[in-house]
Image 1 (tube, rainbow, N blue to C red):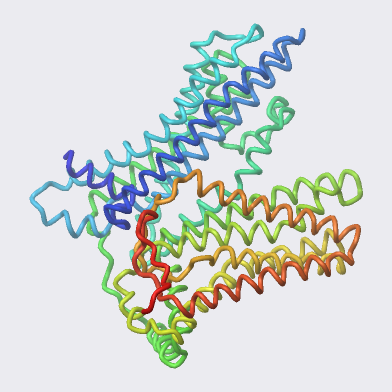
Image 2: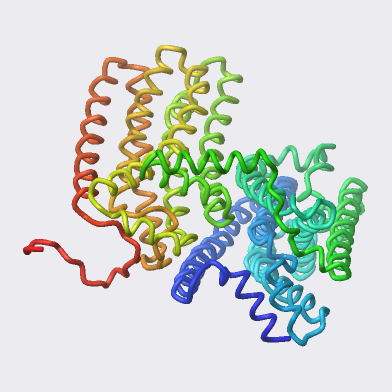
Length: 562
C-alpha cells in the first residue's frame, strides 16, 4: 500500500511527464517558491501588528473590530483560492485513469487497494496546501492582531480561524474533485478527455482572472461589515460566517452564512465521494473505447497531411507545434496561466482607472497609463508563458525528424515557424484585445498611436524572448531549476520594469507631445531591427538544440577551424 501510494504521489508531482533530473529540478523550483511564500507569510504578521496597534490606540473599538472581520475575509479568500488552484492543476489525476487501470488491475492486488492508495496520495498532496495555509495564517493572524479591543481570547480566535480556513480549503478541493468526478461519470467516455481539459483550463484561467477582483471586493470594508445580501453568493463569506459562529456571535446574518458553508461543504463531499464509489464499482468505464474516426475527421486528417507534405519545413513545424500544444495539458496550462495572469494584471489597472474616470468625468493618468501598457503587459507575460510551455519535453521521440533536416536552409524555416507561433499565439491576440480599450480611452487618433507603440514594443519584447532560442518546441530535453528561481524572477521583473517605463513614457508622449511618438517609434524600430539581425545570424550559423545543458557545462565558442 505504501509503495503504491508513493507511486501515485510521484505522478501528482509530474513523474509521468519528467525524468529524474526534471523531477529534481522541479523540486528545487517548488522549494524556492515555497520559501518565497513563507517569507511573505512571515512579513504579513509584522504589517498586521503595526496596523492593529494603531487601531487599538483609537478610543472607538469599532474601526478595530471592522478591520478584523475584513482582514479575516481576505485571508480566507487567499487560502481558499490557493487550494482551489492547486486542486485544479491536478484535477485529471484525482481519480484513477486509464493507465492506472490497464497497468495495475492485471497485478495480483485487489481493486480497493488501488483506489485506496490513489485517495491516500490525493489526501496527502492536498493536505500540504491546507496545512500550509493554516501554519501561515491561522496561528500568526490571531496572534499578532490581538489587542485591547479584541472581543475574544487568542486561543479561541486561533481555533475558530483555523477551522474556518480548513473548511474553506477542503471545500475548494472537494468542489474541484466533484466537478472532475461528474465529468467522468456523466459524459460519454469518448468526450471525457476533451471535457476534462476544457474544465481544467476554464477553472485555472477563471481563478487567476478572478483573483484581483475577488481580493478587491474582499478588502471593501463597508461591503463586508454592512452585511450585504451579495455576500450570500460569495463562497469565502460562508466560511467567514463559520468563523464568526465559532466565536460565539449570535448574529443571524453570519449564522446564515455559516449554514450555507456547511451545506456547500457537505454537498461537495457527497458528490466527490459518490463519484469515487461509482467509479470503484464501474472501473471498466476508465478504459476508452476504440477510436472510430468519422469520415469528415478522416478527410480533415488527410488534408492536414497534404498541407504538411506540400508546405515544407515551416508548415511542418507550425502544425507540429500547434497540435502538440492543443493536445497536452501541461504546456497548455503553463501558457494559459501566464496569459491569464497578464490579462488579470492589465484588466485590474484599466478597471480601477475606469472607475475613477466615471467618478470624475475625465480620463485619469492612471487610466491612460493602464490603457497604453495593457497590450505590452499581456504580450510580455503571454510570450514568457509560451516560451516556458515550449520548453516542455512532450515529444522527444519526434526530434529525429528535425535532427535529419537540421541544415542551414531548413533550420531558418523551422525557427521562423517558432517565431510566428509567438506572434500569432501571444502578441497578436494581446494587441487585438487591447485596441478597442485604447481607442475608447484615448480616442481614435491617439489610440492608433498607442497601438503603434505597443506593436513596436512587442516586437522588441519578442526579440528578448527569443534570445538564445534554437529549439523546435517540445523536442528538447529540459532541466528545470538550473537557474535559481530568485534570479529568474529578477530577470522577469527587470524586463517588466523596462516595459512599464516604456509604457509610461509612451503614455506621457501620446497625451502631451504626440510628435514625440515618431522619435520613440524610431528607437523601438532600431532596437528590434538590430536584435532581429543578430538573432537571424545566429540561427543560420548554429545548429538546433535537442539536449538541454546545465549552466556549468563547457561552452564552445567556435573560434577555431571546424
